[in-house]
Image 1 (cartoon, rainbow, N blue to C red):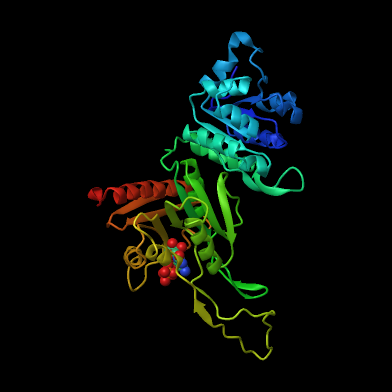
Image 2 (cartoon, rainbow, N blue to C red):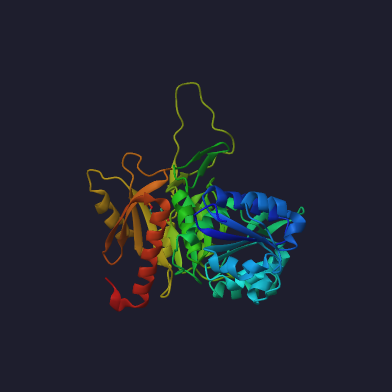
Length: 419
Ligand code: CTP
């Protein structure tokens, strides 16, 4: 008997220490109106027992195909699900799923499911990096399964590295994106997103910075991951949680942001970027000198003069160094109108000056955007198109930007459609 009318979720749990985090993920689903059937593997029950899953989901829990036989659960669960999410997905479960084994209820369910599947791996770094695991992940991704990148950090023992289960909130957010039916049009693409605001140190305790929270960049990264992209997020002083399935490079200053972005766009050992979105707010200037000790008051009423030097313009450099098949490059501009022109006029001349493909323009007169959850923007295209994105969430704007990126990439590949 189903007590809830929301989307039906199958939560597969395989046998890793991170199984306890799946209980928190389950709560996030049930508290937001989803009906969840938990399908643990035998090994998962070694970590968290069936009573926990039954109590939290309100449904009986089985691991094999010979319980509840008249109900044919090994077929029905998969057929009726709106989403199957496996968290944690161990190396063994990834391998069984990749090769179509059907030796327990979870793997049977994966074979009968016709809905989207999300897998959140968790294992030791060596197991994750092993060619066989990577090959299996590739097979699953080629089949349209959203396999999240594991998070970096402390593993079961004292060791650290990639392999941690992403936080339940991040897995939940990725599942919500999938349930929203987003297109998978960035599958196989590598995108780089910069987010946050850089800080230029003045002395050991002070810096010059700005009010960018990084929210829009995080929304862009999350949206791109949901659309299937491999995402590198270069985050400048971002304190908010990072979405699941996103590689993060943390930076502080504009120089560090530049180095982080350039390394991510053309990595020595990885795929060059197909798109770069500069959503970060880099400080344009830095103090000429960094004081080695805290700058003190003089107590004679005089104030120090701080001399500044200009920082590199990363967006401009990306555009100028772009090759023939270079990435689609997107800039952001937070503008206010003034006596020299309107917001749109300033934005048009910025797009021309920077030479990027798209410029996403926020009108920030009267504190309209910084730190808020909602936004509205205009997307200007190098070809001259102007698209108004109506007032909505930063996630809505993020998807509008990726829609525009996909259109722009098509135009660049097929210039006859250029507008
Ligand atoms: N940007 C950059 N490097 C900088 C400054 C800005 O890459 N040193 C990027 C931002 O990430 C953004 C775009 O350029 O995508 C526009 O940023 P903005 O600060 O509006 O541009 P500026 O050239 O600094 O123009 P303004 O004089 O209006 O501040």
